[in-house]
Length: 154
Image 1 (cartoon, rainbow, N blue to C red):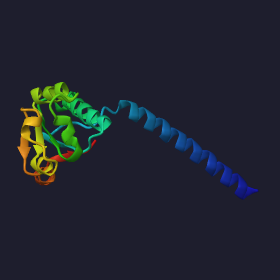
Image 2 (cartoon, one colour; image 1 turned 90 degrees about the vertical axis):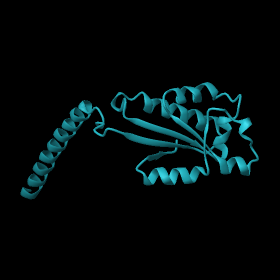
Image 3 (cartoon, rainbow, N blue to C red; image 1 turned 90 degrees about the horizontal axis):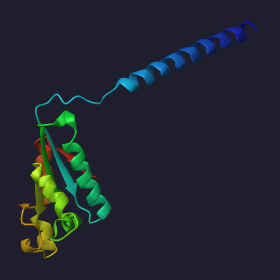
Image 4 (spheres, one colour; image 1 turned 180 degrees about the vertical axis):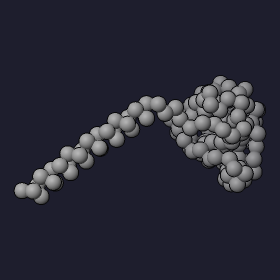
């Protein structure tokens, strides 16, 4: 009987402690405002390698969300590199032209992989005239990663 009483007391005290800790965690969570941007520069390279309209739109939306994060104002370097199926987003008269031009206006470097163009027999005249070009998309990602850039693949 004495052991049961001790066990029940222990359970009751533990439950009270857990409830108190949970309440403190909830209060602390409500006060959290996210990570602080303490560096002077943040570098992100977005990988767009799929032709899926949903993925392309998501990539553009993600970049815009990043560009409008007040914590990162004036601290961003952003690149969007397309290869493989992602090249479709850069074709003239695609539905993404206005959105991609807006990214460029906001300082995003918009880049196309030359390997993909060669493999798919795509001429530069078929793509937007405001693009930059790199020998390979994967090479661009590797170099940027080793320079401290964060690779984001939506």
